[in-house]
Length: 313
Image 1 (cartoon, rainbow, N blue to C red):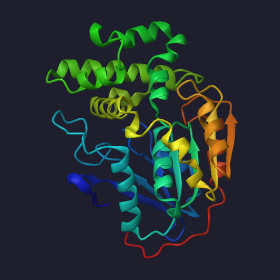
Image 2: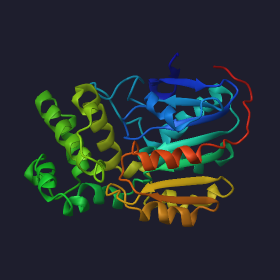
Image 3: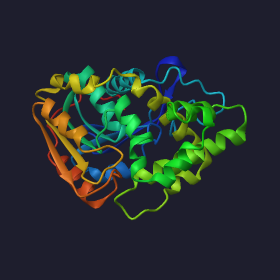
Image 4: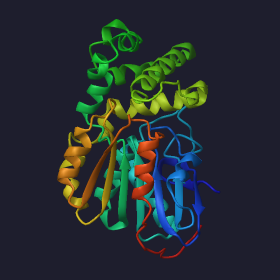
């Protein structure tokens, strides 16, 4: 599958699965920086859907890659990613599509749908976040009350003078150090903290994806880039803009044991989004859990009947 050229010299990797004339859907992965693997296809019935997987800018198989020491991330913002999703839709000749987003992907999905509501038939979001300053502060500081020892190790991964400030910004600076050892330690420390809170509520196992130094560096750089800037959005911008989603059916699936993103986030969003439904399940943040996966699958069972304008796949 060819890469799709977008702005600023970026090449986006995408691929399509399922029946060619099925109900079109776009998957927006988490992270930022996780990339979009084929595991996402398990949520769909590929006999009725045409599912499009997209690696967001600078991660996965998209180019250039954020793990490269000299990579410039200034052209990687929420606004750039929204434009990329719309560019792919136009390239494919799709009129409207289902939007599935998890974790960071739910933030991107909301930003996309609020910018282009006429292009969305329905949305399914899980492990819902809106990536506000308040949420970033919670996930880098507030949740320390649950994991004090591990959080102290995370905090102490940055120089003492920066420990009372924006920890995402401090780690981002370390991750762009000219010293490869400094970069590697910062990526390891960041990803260890990620595993701590994301996998709470499940049988804890370290994610094997962080054993890959290329993935680990890319992920840590992109997450800190977005978090230090609160996703380049105004505080509560997505919540305040939720009225634009009126008429778009939405299902929000969230774990009651999610300490990475507390359930009040989707609760408030559901109240501000006419036509949405909130489903709280016995799960943490990690989207692979049985209860959450079952709820997401159920929400995707009855796709909207929409058609391609013209397909250029």
